[in-house]
Length: 386
Image 1: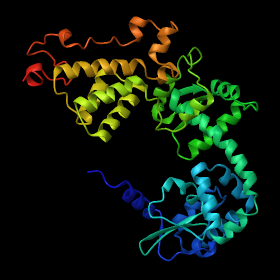
Image 2 (image 1 turned 90 degrees about the vertical axis):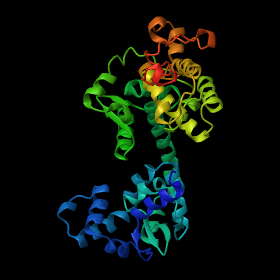
Image 3 (image 1 turned 120 degrees about the horizontal axis):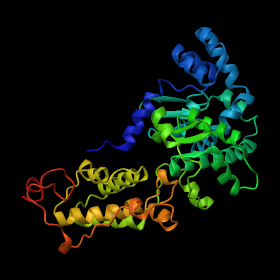
Image 4 (image 1 turned 180 degrees about the vertical axis):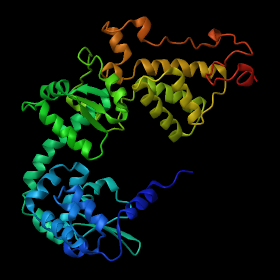
């Protein structure tokens, strides 16, 4: 049984919290921290000379840095929408008390010392020290929020491109962005924003003027392979609203083919809605990366969803082929195989997965010692031939 997500979040929050009485004055908080924690804060804020500082010196340097309005501006404008909402809340309240507050909503500020978390008497408190509140109130948050909104949209374009295309030249992404905006952006500016995202631990990588999805890049050799042929690649460029949906890593186009596969599995193989949805997610993700048909079939076994008859197995294979042919793939610049075939951009005989005739009459006769059609890898007599 899966652990309660709320309890998991509470555990994570406690791991990063100061255990003990809640404090709201910056000097007092900094003095309570270990030298290791102070060094981490100093490193996150790139305070020069930190390696040679003693604990008291680190505390003083951080106090001066974090109460300087000019230093706070770049940290605040790098915040995303959820972080900005939390910032406004901690600016106006003594603390936020929520044991299951999503860690990602405040980790950016926590890692830099703008906010601190405390766990006391079974309750989690997240707060901004009074001295930092005073400094933040002097930097013109309303103007910074406009700047942050502009930056956030650029971050979203970068994330969307990484999720939809897997790999794309910065020049091409600049072209896409500028086609949607009156105010243009340069390749250098885009690279700088992507670098900021990578620095925040997001799955973004830029190398040799190419943007990679960090989950796809892998080793240097794999990155080089992904970058081959980018100049000739045809990219699927949807309207701005649709493109930006891909900024959410969990988003994908729920195609009619995926819906049909999901309905078949629910009606014939497994009635556990959550398990089937997870299966569909993994099949879609595998198709995006052009996994083999066998790898897609293996997802059923991984999710403990069994084929009950050879007819079911054959039907699933047919549905998987439809899903595969209609999934937006990294290797195809976000195009589906069906779209590329319609544009005569691929050899239809080699590109599209041939559909299987799944009618009962068309079911092939399988020898007892031949591989089972369900793709299990077992002989028919040891699988559905029992």
